[in-house]
Every structure is written in C-alpha cells, then in structure tokens.
Length: 224
Image (cartoon, rainbow, N blue to C red; front, side):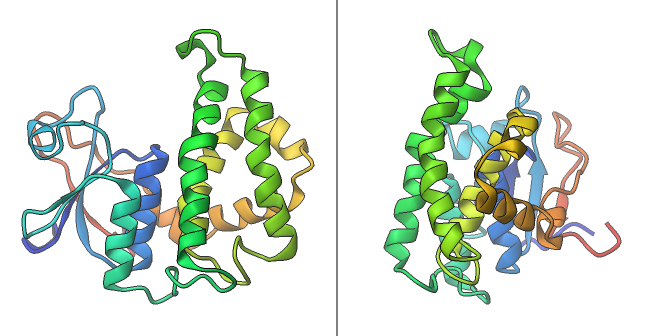
C-alpha cells in the first residue's frame, strides 16, 4: 500500500549524494513519505512546477510547502523528531557541524566533481583535484583520529550529510582510496555504509517514469 495522503512526497534519485542524505535523515527521524525515484532525463512536470531548478531532492509537504535543498530537508525532519540527537553534536555546537557540511558542499564538492568527471570541465586534471580534495580529508582524519565520529562518540547530522559525498569520491577510484593514509576516515565511512539504515536508504525501486505508475512508501516494510 502506498503511503497516506498526509505523507510528504519526495522526488529522489538513488545515486545522488544530496538525495541520499535526505533519505537517510528521513529514515533516522522515522518520517514516512512517498518516494518517486526519477529518471533524470524524464523529470515529471509536477516536480518542475513545484521546483523549477529541476534538481533532487524535492520534498513536497501536505501543507503545500516545498523544500528543495537537501540540508533543509535534513533539518526539517530532524527538528520534527530527532531520537538520536543528531542536531545536538556531542563535542561541539550545531553551528560548527553545519559549517563542516558547508565546506563539504562547496570546497570539497567543487574538487569532487572535477576529480570524478574531468572531461566535463575544461582544463580539469583529475589528479590535481584529488590532491585538492585531500585537504578536506586531512581535516576529517584529524577529527576521526580523536573520536569515533566527526564530533564525538556518536554520529551527528554532519556524519550523515558528508558520508554520501565521501562514498562518491571513494567509488571514483576505490583502489587509491583504500590504499590511502586516511585510515580513520576509511574506517568511519565503511562503518556508516554498513549500517542497516544505509542499506534501507539505498534500496532499489521501480522508476517513477512518464506514466507516473511507480512510487513507493518510505521507509519500506521489512518485506521490501
């Protein structure tokens, strides 16, 4: 059975790190929603009407409010219900955790894109951008050498917001990443990706294509 009419609708794309972290936060806050998994070359008119920028994730609330930035979705759902205290980092303030996410979303993401897709950017050299991205790794490694998670012995919003982008970086050249000197970072990432929650977040479902026939309730049932 598809979700209730009162459930929010989430337009998503499984492999997008922005959509990934939004789904992760929704799962961790037990927020039910109806997920429409997109074919990016066939974006539904409805999604483009409510969010003309045409990127995922997009969350449509029953009130008609639209939230179309992944971090805003995370904050919205966790402010409603945050059983793991992800908005209360153990060893720092929420502002500092959000600042780390900002660095991820700006400086690190800039180099990640050019490392992963050098042919899409004029003059981009993958090895150079990998080296520049490592400056972020150094920052994370220092934190993770001192603590199990980025800001203490338990995860906070920063862990779940950053990990999908580190996963994308790792997958670009898994051999290089696995052999790198960032041992604490590797351990942290693998631990998060092996959680049952991440497995659920990454479930594969039919695509919500042009006939609008495929959508699914999230979180899925145990049988899914």
